[in-house]
Length: 285
Ligand code: KIV
Image (cartoon, rainbow, N blue to C red; front, side, top):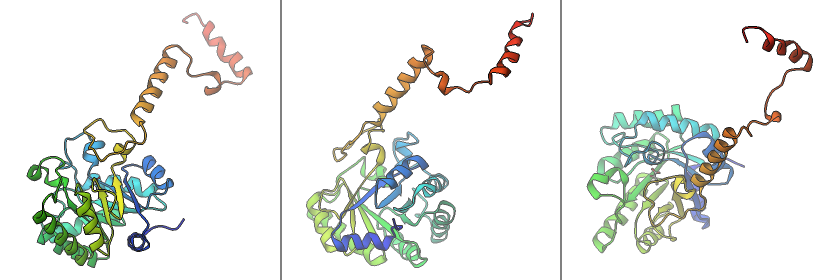
């Protein structure tokens, strides 16, 4: 299967094919997600919550994203690989932004980066990143890095004025060169309107079925997160229960000496055992 590029993601919208996106943060889950045929894998700063156990995404560093992207990169053969630019990795200066993007691509193996928001400085930096040949995914609506401004998981674009602003920002990000835009927690009618207004795809999370594609946090989808689960999450597996059951069974097997079985052990050749077993007969034993 050919490797998917940012350009292919735009083509999927043109063909009217819904775009399947998920997060992944390590080698085995990325290999599984890629094998299952998703189009785009995001190493999201959501790892701060679902992997590191923080309350929000703000503690995640560039070093950590680079580390996780490099694990995911080793696993991915098909999906396009996007690295999230964490809090304060692109807000300070052009120089710092470009250096951080360089690390995501060179050290991590990212094929694109994602930036939250559409502040004028952010838009100018998106232009520079795209100019350097790195595809950029935008992120509008609820932007988790602004949790202290908006609060937790707030619907954005609930009235006409906010809706107009969101549409304008989406058009601005498209004009700046983004190849796609995540729309998080936007009412489905507005998300549909924005999707129809853009040439590039919208990737919805909690924004209804009229987006050009969908993204979820893998741990929410497969039931491997104990924190708050928003209403838009569809839990299609219960990995926590499966893992807990396996670990409980392992404990019972070990405690009852039913694990390991002989075929799960290595054994000595008979003649060697004949010699070694003599050691048990030594007086000090
Ligand atoms: O960090 C993340 O995983 C994200 C997605 C939820 C879009 O930004």
